[in-house]
Every structure is written in C-alpha cells, then in structure tokens.
Length: 507
Image 1 (cartoon, rainbow, N blue to C red):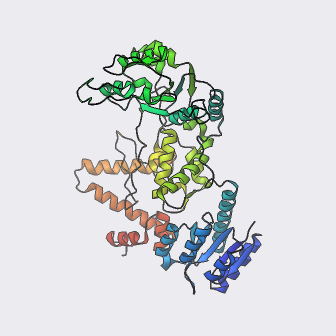
Image 2: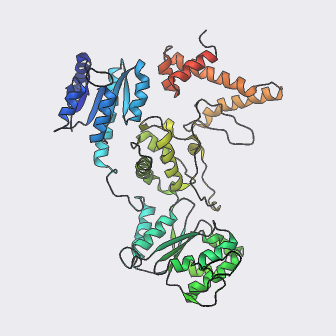
Image 3: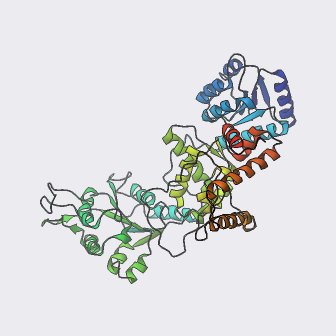
C-alpha cells in the first residue's frame, strides 16, 4: 500500500498523526507545506492525502485543486478549524473526501483516514471511471439468463417480444439484440428505429408507422417515409405494443405476415425488410381475453419471449448500477463523481424500486446534485424512495415517458411530517420500525386536536415547537456547541443561529 501523506505546518499535528497511524501499521509521509507535496508528486503519489487548510506558502484548497488535476480519484481529507467551516464547503465542492475539524479526536481521525484508505483501495480494484460504458449491467442470475438469451438470438432475425415492468431497460435489450445481430454492427450495420406506440396520438400513429403520400390528408404537403421504411435493412422496435389501437393491429399483422405495407393514401405496395422487436409492460394474454389485443397478432409477436426482471429481483446488481450511474451523472454535469458508502448501498438494496433501473438512475442523478458531501451516506437518500411500495404482482404498470423527478431539498431541511388519516405519512430519510412511528401518531393526534378546536396558525405553531425541540435536543447532545449541533441536524451554521434567535432559545 502507498503511504498516507500528512501536510501541516504544525509539527505537533504531524507528530501525533504519524504515531497514531504507525500504531495502525499504516505507512506515513509528512510535509510541512504544499510546495513539498507538489514536488513529491513528480515521482510518487499517496494512498490518501490529509492536508491542513491554512498554511504558510499555500492553502489546502489550492493544494486540493492541483492534486485533483493529477489524481482525480485520490481521497483528500481537509483539516479545518471550526471557524473555517465555510472553507470546508469549498473543499467539498473541490472534491474533498471529507473534512476533519480541529481540534479533532484522534481515534475518530484515524477511523476517517482508514475509511479513506478503504475507499482508495476499492477504487483501485474497481475503477469504473476509465472503463468503456457497458451496454447492460448485471451479475444477478436473472440478468445472466437475459444475456444468454441475447447471445442465442444474436445470429437470428426472429421476432422477439420483451416483457417487463416500466423502467427495466427493455429498449436497451432491444438495442443489444439489434447490435449483435447480422443487421447490426457486426453485419450490414442497418438502422435501429424505435417508436413508442403509447406516446403518439392514434390519428398520427398510422402515418408514423407506414408513412403517407402527399395529399393523403389535410396537412400532408409532402410524401413522408414511415418508421418501417426508415428501418429497412435494420430493426424496428415497437415499444408499448399493448397500447396499439385495435385497427392498427390489423395492419401490423399484415406486415408481419407477408412483409408488405402501403403508405397512408398510397396504392403501391412496399416491401419491409425489417426485423420487429416488440415490448410491453402489460399482460398481453389478459389484453387478448379482454378483446383489446388481437390473438393472431399476439401469437405472431410471441415467437420468442424475453422477460426482464424487476430491480427488486436483482438487488445484488444495485451497487454496481449505482456506482455506474453516479459516474455517468457526474460526467454529464461536469463535476467530480460522488462516492457511496456501504451503508447507503445496503439501504438501497432494501428498497423496492417500483420504477426499477430507470428510477435508480434518476436517484443517482438527484444525489449527484443534492447530496451535501462527496461521500453519500444513508441520510442523504431521498425519503420518497425509502417510502416506495412495490407494485402489485399482476397489476399493469403505467408507462413513464420520463424519469420520476425527486423534488429539490428545501432551504430548511427540518420539515413537519404531516400524516392525514387518508394518506401515507411522510417518513424520515431512514426506514423506521413500526414501534418508532408512535411519535408520528402523537403528532397527528395533536394536530387533529388543534384543528378541531379551531386554533389559528396550527402549521406555524407546531413547526416552531418541532424545530425548537429538535435544536434543544441537538444542543444538549453537543453540550451547547452550535456548529456541531448543526452538523448533527444536517443544517447550516447560519441556519441554526437564525433559528435559535427566531425561536427564542438564547434565553
């Protein structure tokens, strides 16, 4: 293992950390100023860098910036006095792993450095930043079955029906089937054309699929090629086929049967050299029984059926998927990728994810923007995700045309959880056991009493009492240290000061 570099102009700080880390059998190298560190980086590099924020000859933030340019994945811990907490925010924005407030507890400092070392070693073993983006991620047995099916179908032009809940990645699988087929990259390099039949109005869908001749209807100023023509020599992916209007199902069946179709308003038959892959989140057998889907079309599409498992059936894939999506979001936003703790990953694995992989990707994008530190902890996960209920086993899942957006965090993270009798209570950022919900029930009882008594400003009154109790409790635990209390509550230093004044807690 490479050594841990300590940078501080205070010789006593260097000495204490050197001895403590030596007892942990961790190699250490010390520096008195940033210039020495930059010179040493020419022919060496650390496992973890621990740097003071204020030193003669250069600041820790400047050093952080320069080190991150050379070693973007290096965990950097910034040591800072409580009066420098505003600078600590800048440290996080610059990509710091964590900050260590002075004066620090030596045991906690060693634990933090050990965590940074573990993170660094894990990044070395599984650094996804420089790996090419995979088509589809999955090590779970259910996904391995999908991969095997894609492999078996790679040299075939057979029609495939992909089933699975919304957000499971049906279009990704369709694209993989095309890419690895004779029509894809390894063959004729034909086009992959996708259309969501549920997202296009019924009156326009026929023209979208088959095209139209000039003057075929009002507004048809020119001839237009439809998706079947655009996909000639390649693959046409018909997403949400279960929502296709019944009369259009007849035209689609004819194309699949004899390979010919007519443009809207046309009289000349056109040949369709197209492989069709269809997908649906609905139970097509049930749609057939209801008379909403043609049975002969169902059998024509259902030559090979490929079922994609929901994310809750492949929870072991969640850590790899989460890290991949965090890297992807950071690249899209042009920021330093955030890391996620093992505890947060364990919590993610316990979530139901009704929106499946699409929802997980959206959560990771939300965390990239909203998580306050570079290391994502369980408290940073959105409560909406932790409250989500699994879909009913046989209930059709409505298709979402866009990822579910989680709301931005409010300026004041302390919220009053209201629990109306006819709705789900809002939960905190971690799951609570049934016994721990008593306080929410007590809150509901008090809110109901005040409302029925006709009191005014019930919201403001309960909110003030709630916030005051939270702040008093935190201050009691920290023996009156406001900044430490703010950290525990997850609010800013200025916020807790303002709240103490507003609520009259100075008395």
